[in-house]
Length: 130
Image 1 (cartoon, rainbow, N blue to C red):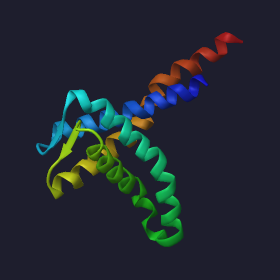
Image 2: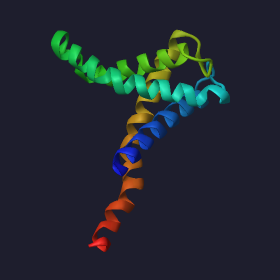
Image 3: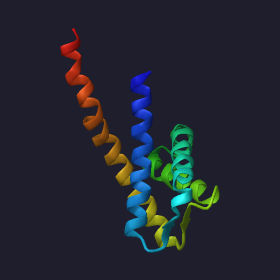
Image 4: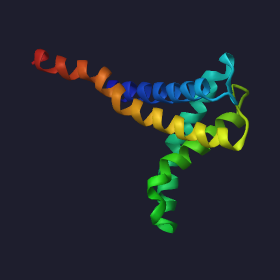
């Protein structure tokens, strides 16, 4: 249960980091502090729910596009996060494309690196407990 909570925290942190970095790099992507948490939670939930669905549909109907599933789910997650609440606004087609790429890349990197940082201590402590 503890590992599940840590992984959930890492997933939310990586989503927050991705959205925040994209908002820093893109002039037409705006975050409001009051709605940031809602935007992150909506984005993370959308990704968590939609990625398996999009993967299944891609395998069934367009096998050649399987590599783009993460990008599609990142776009849909950003779209839903911008529609629900007023914490996130994205203006312009190029900003949508770049925001999707940046959030997808930062989130992917963060979900690889953050577990190494936070779960490493747990692995290092295991031999001492025995």
